[in-house]
View 1 (tube, rainbow, N blue to C red):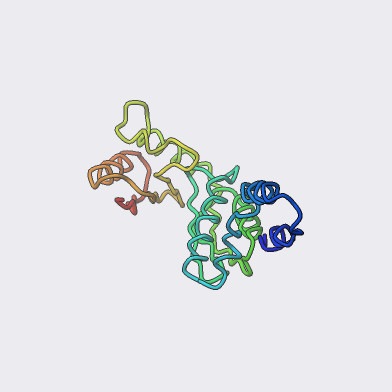
View 2: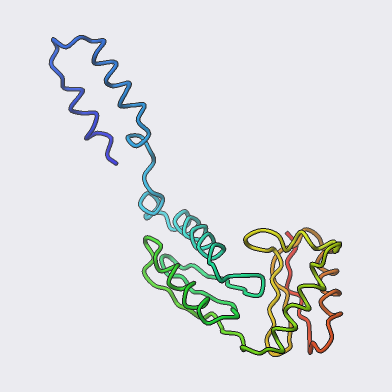
Length: 199
């Protein structure tokens, strides 16, 4: 909001008004948060791509982790180039794929969304593996249990035709190795790819 439009008329008040009243009025206006609030980031940073892309990345992340169908068995990543967003990854349900794209399109300033998210096979056998992997990694008493907590678990389990991929971020190399070893204990899994990062 342009503060000059609210303050300027008061600055031109006639000299016969008590100075105390003028000071009181200006103080009241200055104390209103809306008058001096910073502009919306998408407007303030439009001319500085780095700042805008950082803000946009945070917005996309917020949208993804609050999706109602997005869970520990999905993995959605994204690339940002200016106001263009490219979605990548894998999801279990087709509705998640379309919902993610629709949600991101609603962010102010986004001009293009390219949806390259892959739908995982709707296989009962893969679904059994998903839950077996979940129990192997996060069962009660497991040192990795805390990675399953929260709206967006820090370890995600991707199962595609009996092939398992672990993605996410863990606290240490020891946790990364432990997750990989536990994932390999599940029977009937063709392969386990450990793409967990330490950070």
